[in-house]
Every structure is written in structure tokens, then in C-alpha cells.
Picture 1 (cartoon, helix red, strand yellow):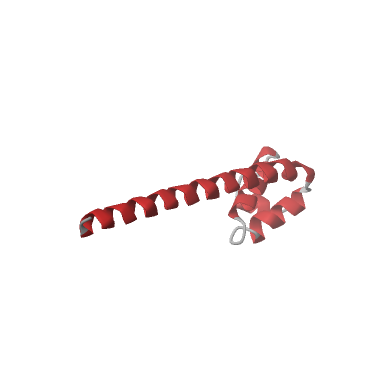
Picture 2: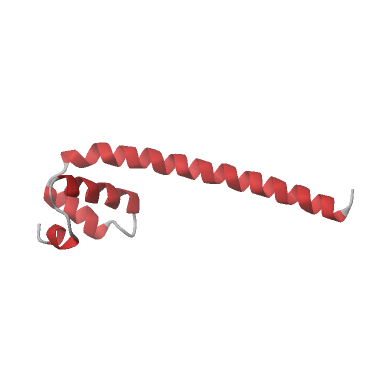
Length: 84
């Protein structure tokens, strides 16, 4: 087998692996998002605001879920959230 055929096979295997990993990560993020969406309605406004303001770097999915719940409760802007 020629060199370029081997290179092509390696690239194909690497691409398939990368696609599989991306799908796995997407499914995990989707599950966490659904879990957080279920948890957020049980939290107080103050708890949600704290998550929005402190968790954005560590857990952006959680922060987005908290922000979405606060919007449902009428807090539209970050200034509204900071004032809680």
C-alpha cells in the first residue's frame, strides 16, 4: 500500500474518532442542560442570581439555565440580576 493511502486511512480513522467524541460530548451537555432546567425552578431568585454571576466561567450551561429561569421570572437584564 502506498504512503498516501496509509495517510488517507489514518485521517479517516482520526476523523471518525473525532466525530464520535464530539457526539458524546454533545449528548452529555444536552443531559446536563435538561438536568439544570429541572433544578432551577426550585431555587430562589437570590440563588439563581448567584449562579449567574459566579458560575459562568466554570459551568456556562448551568449559568445559562439560571439566567433563563430568571428571565421567566421577569429579570431581563444583568443589572436586574445584580440588584437581587
